[in-house]
Image (cartoon, rainbow, N blue to C red; front, top):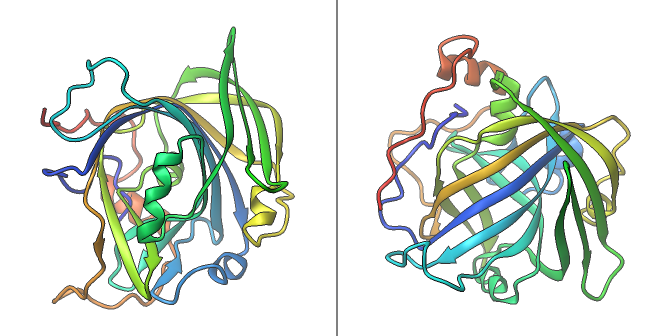
Length: 272
């Protein structure tokens, strides 16, 4: 089930941060095109009969180790942009699979040790009145993007909005093993958004054809209580059924919410 709020508490975080000024730009793709990019233990999670790929630029702020307060001066703040899709493990648990991650902070390249596909580059997030621009180019190549959006009014999320924006673990592959990283934060406060400019080569660099349909877009001012857990190997879990199909993701959202969502629940209680 895709949950609007965090599925688990990350009681011992490996890293804490805020994710701010986040844009979500999604395209539908034929499932077989995305499945070809996944490891064998993961299958595409579908919504409305398609796989979805998201371009998600944001500002990663106040990055710190557990126990360090966000008020400490000089904490790292930098731009990051993810190209991601939605998957299910063979035990049925949903999550993210990153096709690429562009990052302006070289320290984040340490994540490659567990298979996080970080690429260093020149990234920028700028605000001009009611417009926000995201630009980036990968070092040593011609992979780049440019996105300009104008956020609008807050929205009450529909089941599709929840499905496209809310996941609580990420999968990676390294040394012949699948790994998972849990995450906890308050639910995304979503806003409507207009896309004024969108040029990108990230999808083709990842092995997908250029998107042809108009994207589905969202914006969030961000979440400030992000707790990233320890990355651990995905081991078999006794008592969990095998994954037969990842079709019908919208039905699982609806079941989790108990019907159409009208009033979003409050944020989870986060520890210090």
